[in-house]
Length: 228
Image 1 (cartoon, rainbow, N blue to C red):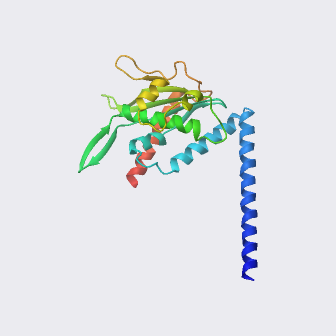
Image 2: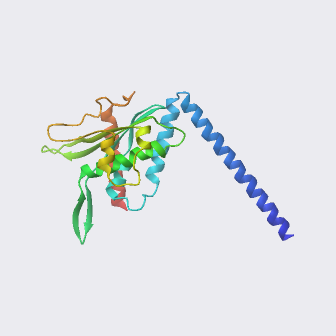
Image 3: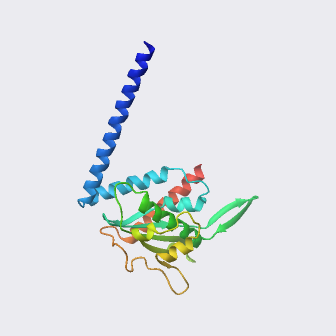
């Protein structure tokens, strides 16, 4: 009797799991077909879901908190089935060591690390779509002498899928990786214009709106961290 119930339970479990797998495959196929047909609304819905899932996930081990916060501010500037452009906001990596606030890395270094990690996500962790080109713009905000909060672009990098395939994702030399891509970094007398020769122009949302959205996401994350 007991053996019979066990066999029945195993069969039921097998059937349920099989149904779930088939449904997941059909859903994935439907996503791919819809996006391949040029449905931008479906694409942006997928992107929104994916970014929200990344925000709710746990950070990988040894990920600096500043890098994780920068990734949380990811905002899609523009995208189609072959190209995607995302903006981030980075801030210095400040930690408390022995009761003292210490800047472990400046905003520029955080921007480099976050840009590389975001490119990896866009190329290899985005479900149902394979982008041929990706652009990541990383900005930071500062308070002007007048007290207003302003933003400046720290770097903008453009990557093809072929370049991403050759990247050393296991290494830690983010400067070398960015140098292999089409990257421009902020320097005295040479500000970065992420719209110059961009891989894709925003169809509806102005880049300034994307920056403001990223800023709002960063502030929300700060408030969340404060509550925690």
